[in-house]
Amino acid sequence: MDDIDLEILKILKDDARAKYVDIAKKVGLTEGAVRRRIKKLLSEGIIKKFTIETSVEFEGIVLIETEPTMTNEVARNIKRVATKTFEVSGDYDIAAFIQAYTIDELNGKIDAIRDLPGVLNTNTLIKLKD
Image (cartoon, rainbow, N blue to C red):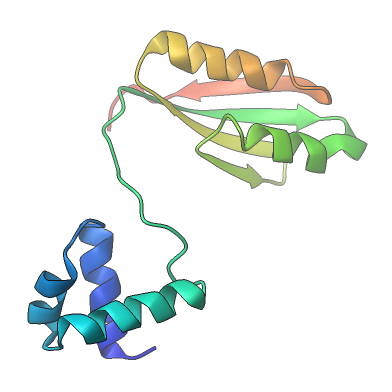
């Protein structure tokens, strides 16, 4: 990976829908060269996926205590509900970052986490403002 690849990544990070032709103009390459570089970045796993970012109304972190032998399974299941999942140290075993467009959707995700087998206790923190 060189400086041009890094510049392409920066452009795509700002706008995942950027056209190859526009990227090419910005980095001083042909459209075909940019297309090949992006294809290579994808095949090497440097670019994992193209995504969009939306504004959500509600965000929270759910701290989860699990049965000691079930932490991996619970973490795997939480990934279906949460935006991001982290195994953590301390009083809790997992931290799940969740996002929702409505408070009802947020509550539904929290309930889904609480209902998972192996979940002993949760503590939810809801973001009030940035």
